[in-house]
Image (cartoon, rainbow, N blue to C red):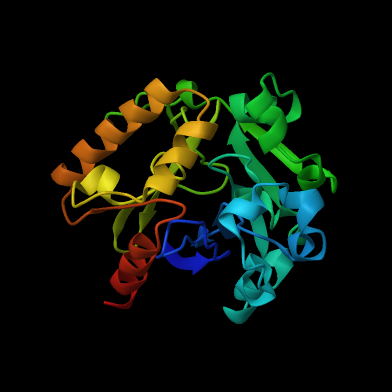
Length: 266
C-alpha cells in the first residue's frame, strides 16, 4: 500500500527547541483513504480552549489550517469523503482533533481506549479526554487486539481486514489505558507507528538524551508508567534488530517524520 507521512500539527513545548509534530499517516487502501490518527483539525483552531484544554499553554500548538489533515488530504488530490476509516493510537486531543473534519469516517480504536475516553476513571483521564472532540458523534469501531494472531512478538495484535490486508492494530497500553500501535505493510516494507509509546528517538535508539520537559510530561500523564518503560525497552530492541523491511516512527518526533518522508522519496 502507498502511504503519505503528514505533519498535522506543529507544537512548540517549553524546553524542546526542535518542537513536536503530529505525525499522521495517510494510506491509499483498496477500500479508500485510511488515516492513522488525525492530528489537529479545523475546529481546534476555532475553539482551542474547549477542544484542547489547558495543555495548549505547555505544548503551544501552532493551529495552522494548512497543516490539518483535511487540507493535506485535499492537496493530495482527495476529498474528505474519500477518507473511509481513521485508526487511532489513542484519544488524546492532539490525535483526534481532525475527526470532525471527516464525519463519515469509521473511527477504529481498542475497546479499552474507547471505554477510557467515554467513561474516564482517573483525574488524568478526565483531564485528557475532551468531550468536545467527540461532540460530532463519531462512528467508533471497537477492537479487541487480543483476539488476533500476533505481530512480530506482540501477542495482542489484530489485522483490520475489514479495512484492508496488512493493517494491524497492536495493543500497547501505558501512555493511556488503551493505547495502541499500528503496523502497515507498505510499498517500502513494514511501517510501525508507535503513537505516544515513546516521545523522542533517543528513548529507543540510545543516541542521546531527550529534552527534560518532554520526559517530565510523559511521566506526568502516563496511565501506567511501568508499562511505558516496558514499551521503551521493547521498541528499543526492535529498533536495534530492525532490518530494511521495518521502519519505526512515533507521533511527535520531527526527525522520525523527516526520516519517513525521505524514505518515501527514495
